[in-house]
Image 1 (cartoon, rainbow, N blue to C red):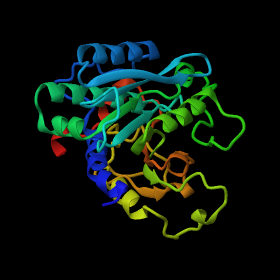
Image 2 (spheres, rainbow, N blue to C red):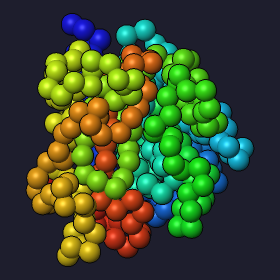
Image 3 (tube, helix red, strand yellow):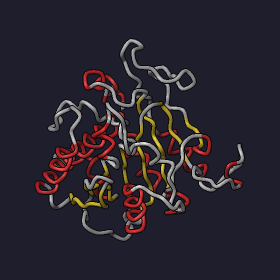
Length: 299
């Protein structure tokens, strides 16, 4: 069994969880947009309360000197264990695409509470995977969101072979060199779509439409695992662009990101990553964000 095939089941479980996390009725985490300081405090609180399964570390600093905090969850949170795949979630790469921050904090809350309650799904994930959660890759951009995203543009398009890189991009590149990530999900907003590599082509053959590429079947399967959309139930007030508009019970469309946005995971770190555009509205009001979830019972 290949590395990708061996991790598919784990990836599928982790991807499938996302749409069912918001508004968990027993969540101990307040449902709102937390600022960067509050996220830092929350992650360290989780580590302090759960040292056997949680560990916090920083991968570097933002342009303005804010730490890029990562929380690891697993039975061996402080070090890699042979045979246990490394998985990562990244959100808020663009400062004004913020729903992913909320989802990842809810994911952490659900996983920890599930583990402490001996829930089988959480026990299985934490015993078979080491999960790294980066709630905000662009804390500076989040601070600026609502006025202008000074540093939020271009994070996704920057590649390791470019001479000028933002501090956050350099931090992620270093992160990829220190951890042997197998699978990853990067959460964005502004559309409803799941995209997969190759996506940072320099003009090579991987850009040819319809051409079969390595791991295409794995990527397509993983992308299709993503359940029904988190389409807003707001009477049409929040809608995607017409070419991506979907009804509530349809699945998120799947595209090759050679036709979508750029990344660096597969080509430069051999990490299978999906880009998940999870909401039509990049920065929905809290009152409307609560309607972006689907009923947990539908899982």
